Image (cartoon, rainbow, N blue to C red; front, side, top):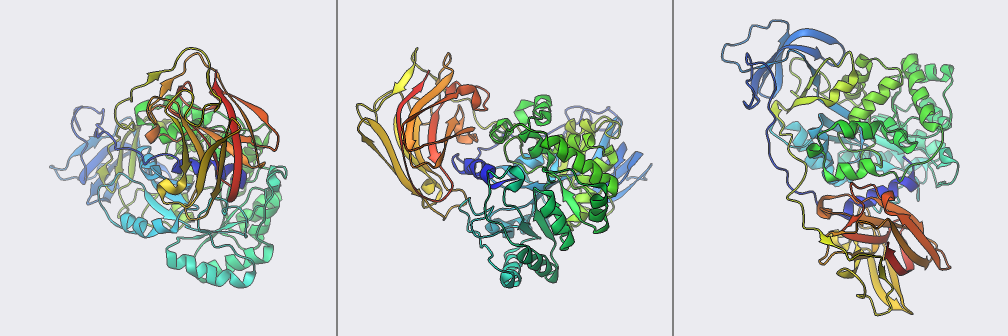
Length: 608
């Protein structure tokens, strides 16, 4: 989505340690004794699923058998003649789907693990570090047991100097003129990009409050032509209808995001269809932005043991939340595009606020159904339609010779697409996926905070007050170049430093460890508010709350501005979207974007 929102969110990933290991627990099938008995390990590598309702990527077919061997679909059809010794899974009362494909993600931390655990066997990444691409290609080309979804990606995006995508500190090579388009695209192809993503956005669709530089029309046209010359797709990031229609007229292959500023005219929808342009609406992130609770309902239906701390954190993050009717406009745009014959590709934009990798695909399917797509069309958007739009081979269908990426769910998905959350077993490359507990390790010990308000006034220095003290926090702990230093001057904490390029998501600032030891949580039950005084250089800053298990949690955040005069900031603890915001291991006060020098002060930091 827009630059201002996304910069804060992405910075979260680097403030936490890598996700911990999972507890292995191989899934078993609750099916009749005539096939796999309860408690028996799910067959893999060579087996058949029999008498199942099958969605093959295009249509539902009843009473089908599917024979899997060596990681691929060997045969399928009704009443197959199967070898007597071939292990069987009884599919009665279940629906077998191709592995889901999320058409819009951003890969960080445990994204690929989280995706696979919820039946998303391939992700189409729309902007990430190109260094990931070589390993991703090797992994997806191999038939082998894995705990990760396959990764296909645009790698680096095409944007203007200072435009959307440059604010994260990642080494982005911007463009300034059409003449540089051919060399830029050729360099992306050499890096391993599977397609080219082009940014056509200046923030105007969000009321103008987030305006930033954007590529001009001529450069976008040159990039599309250069991508096609290299036999690569060109997809264009848009949020406004004017730029969307302009990209269609210039020959774009796909549009990433559905626009929210205006409902498309039926005539224009037909133009998009006639041009053969596909659209990845990313309804999950748009709907959550405007208060829709579909994602939270899916979360509520899900076994919490399967939800990783990262998923909890991003699904509960409402930092994008705003009022307005744009969410309904997005749904209506999808309805009109679909009715006009435009190919819709399901994509979530996970893990942006209000979404979670993998799990949000199931809310995306429900939102597409709400926009008027039939169950068949919804599932095609998440399987064969996505594979065909992005030219992903041997995926998105259950067909002879295709990779055996499969999802078996309880119930009749044709009747009700919400049944996709009832996952029984996932197979990746023909191997059963261990739907492990996503919680890492045992619960940490939680200290009890003293009764009454907890105040740090810095009158006696930097280490005064409750907890284990204040420390610098920067991206240097992960190899970045940002710097910060702390000092107490005139009874206030002064934080100075510089955020620098050199790490994908730079940050710098100060962190208050509120427990007896760094990152040991303390119980602040009975307290409802974080209050502090601040002043500074006018930059945007963020408070991030680390709860119990902080080493595996993406912290929720609340923004604030440190202006030139002292001001009081009060933040209700329930503004931090955690399971229990009164369990606090640390409070970080940091800046991320824009890059450059910063100075701010804190005083009278209080939890009350």
